[in-house]
Image (spheres, rainbow, N blue to C red):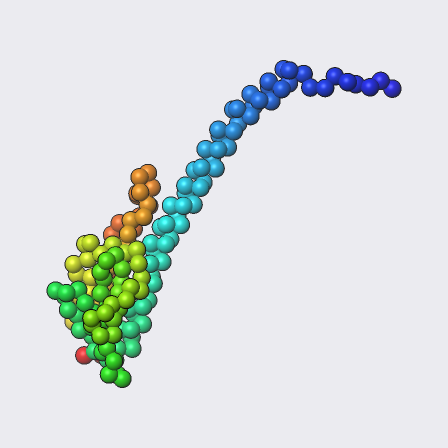
Length: 161
């Protein structure tokens, strides 16, 4: 038996490195593209979650309220309950805020775009219209992956004062 002591030749090493140089940018670009898609999708889903969370909180209160008053000039939703308590809702400082006394407000849901929310609460007949706009968190190339129009939700207040 003969021992083969040749090893790896210089042309084999050069071919190996040439393949690595050609393939690695392709793999890297696919990886970065997938990472970017994941990040923008995550931000888009977070925008939807913020709208759903705000809508859920207000819907729950409106459901149990006895009276619903919309103060459109001040953009405040005033709810009265059967036990005599009151709750106030408003959009301010890029957040949905609530208060039990109408003076001290606590932020409940953040990352909302309150800049163009002039008529965020509107009562039309037996309906309460709620407009919510999340902040645009996807920027630059991904700016098309934002919720661009306000989400409009309608609640029935038919049997409320």
